[in-house]
Amino acid sequence: DAGITQSPRHKVTETGTPVTLRCHQTENHRYMYWYRQDPGHGLRLIHYSYGVKDTDKGEVSDGYSVSRSKTEDFLLTLESATSSQTSVYFCAISGGRQGGDTQYFGPGTRLTVL
Amino acid sequence: AQTVTQSQPEMSVQEAETVTLSCTYDTSESDYYLFWYKQPPSRQMILVIRQEAYKQQNATENRFSVNFQKAAKSFSLKISDSQLGDAAMYFCAYTAGGTSYGKLTFGQGTILTVHP
Image 1 (cartoon, rainbow over the protein chains, first blue to last red):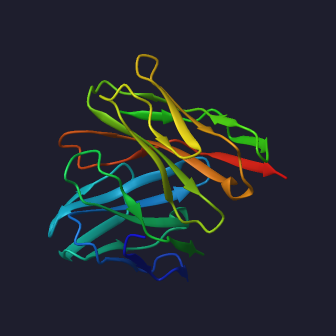
Image 2 (tube, helix red, strand yellow):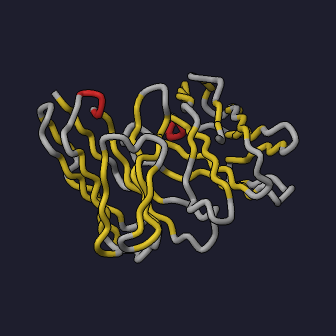
Image 3 (tube, helix red, strand yellow):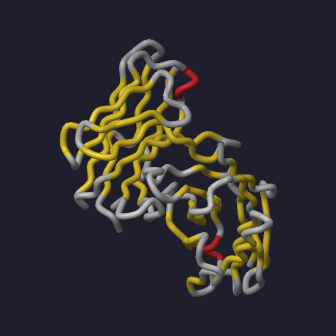
């Protein structure tokens, strides 16, 4: 298994509070991604990173920000959580030697916003 | 924008039988990659199989194989000799090659039930 951990694994928070999810990898992979999974939508890309301090938006980036100050860590922040951000969040990594490199996923974080 | 469609929300199969899960995609790219991921109740996303669009040969991994029809933009997954452990949600996914940064577009998923 690829060395990817996510923390926390479960979180319940209230509307309007800030939340930060952490993804940590031990594979020294260049590319990191955040997806959210909702019923009927599969997984959708929120943000991704192609190197330290290099990030860009995905399909559903509104309300989210990210940071990557080290190769191994990719943080996802919800500045002011809303109920629509209740979801399961997955981090993924890829070696990125070519565009189609396989992505390996972390175990996911279930976030509930009340 | 690329889209991936899985038209079967649910499928079921008897143990030891064969089942095929459907996936279609839309793209204007010529260089791309397709994947099937499995998500068991544990929620972990597990790669099942990967197909490179420029390869005409269909990918195979043990009991799992794909039928890749490039002109029809179809990418179905065949599971042979189904086992109880195959029960899961299956996702089809697409990424463009080149400088796409590997961003994946997923289908909605198909829930597979395996009956003993």
